[in-house]
Image (cartoon, rainbow, N blue to C red):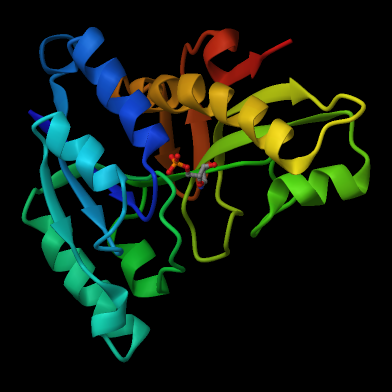
Amino acid sequence: MRNIVVLISGRGTNLAALLQAARHERWRDTLDADIVAVISNRPQAAGLDVARAAGVATAVVDHRSYAARADFDAALTAEIDRHAPALVVLAGFMRVLTPAFVQHYTGQLVNIHPSLLPLFPGLRTHAQALAAGVRVHGATVHYVTDDIDAGGIIAQCVVPVLPGDDEAVLSARVLAQEHRLLPRAIRLLLQQRVRWDEGRVVVHEAAPGDLALLAS
Ligand code: GRF
């Protein structure tokens, strides 16, 4: 069985979507894969309760307990590697990771970011989109590399930006699609329809609707 470990920092709605897909689609049977652990850098993250409710093992590696970023990453690596993961999914994990960490999980580490990368990396992506006046916005699941929010793109979802939108409305519209996007992207990876090969993304027989989700 291929183990999936999910890293979170907050409310965990993307985690919930992933857990629901894994259960409904019976990933254990159909994909020989399962979400085996959820790790948070914040002890109070609501997503930990989501994981517990689903019967998934949880752990906290509190970044405040480590003076240096490298020490935190080493502790996090040790916790993750207890599960010998095939895939590590960052689902609202709000820490910058060291190159050593990223290197350790080359081709196995993916993130969901709430913008159409390479537009609007970093924080407050919905405010950035509104300020830029774009007519479409969305989210991206991508491989994690040393440069923040810049790794190879796996799949994206697109939503309209409507007149009168504010940050909250727009972020809710994107989030609803993130919940469809993330499970699809992880399924593509588990099916090896998208893989990381020597520094680039290779797509093999993926349906267009899996790589690019268009919501009205
Ligand atoms: C999502 O918007 C995700 O794209 C970003 O952080 C947010 C996490 O939300 N990386 P949740 O914790 O999954 O609800």
